[in-house]
Length: 312
Image (cartoon, rainbow, N blue to C red; front, side, top):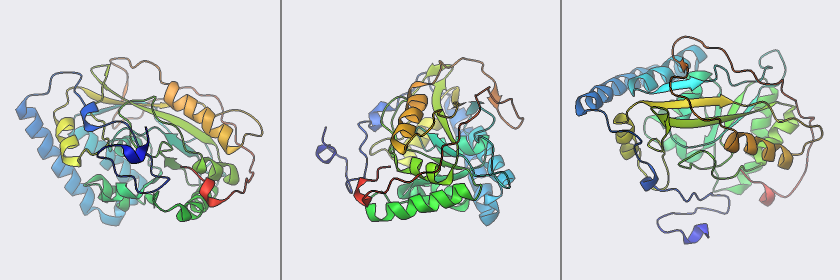
């Protein structure tokens, strides 16, 4: 379908990605929790948000950031399962950071990632305007990219390259918009050039949402959905869990950004194993990282091209 022809969906430029998902995609897989539980969660979430916002610039401290992310999810009754780490080695004093590439389903993706490991985020400019999450993202040091202005893209990629080269790990959403389930959309390639230029490893990560072990779209934040409507669904969701799966780094010598993006996309969008009810949860105690093969660090290489050819 032509994005510009999609009803109710504004396209703000040639690099603005259109998702066919709508708020109607977001449905409960289990009966809602009682009204009293929804009210309790609402009050707990409000308190947690207040605490996080009053931390101000201190929120960027990794220990505080992880604690606040976990507190927000706990208040909503959400479990985070799976990986206990996102990065693939390196970091301060030990080489470049990791480019973490993640599928995008919900505003909850951000606190879920930060609850596992507080990394720098690269997000579309609109995220900064989201209620609650936007304010937390800004205070946490998120870097924003304007997808409606392709002239800014080369600068954004150069900035990302610098962050990775300095040892900072950065999480990005290469689908460039949200989808209601894992397995939809495609990966834009521009951010992978930053990993190549910085000599940084790439870690594909899949986020999957379940209710009582069943796949669920209740947390999806798509199309013309509003934060208030999405939050109401999440507050009423029974047994909601987010599974974070860290895949092995793409392997292969001489990969260009197209090949690297294709391998990462295949891992993230097609590599999620079936969710298992009762899987270990990541809460305030650490769990072991699932075994993954050693990452292959791509060789730095540049592929100059006109700015209009960049995709995210």
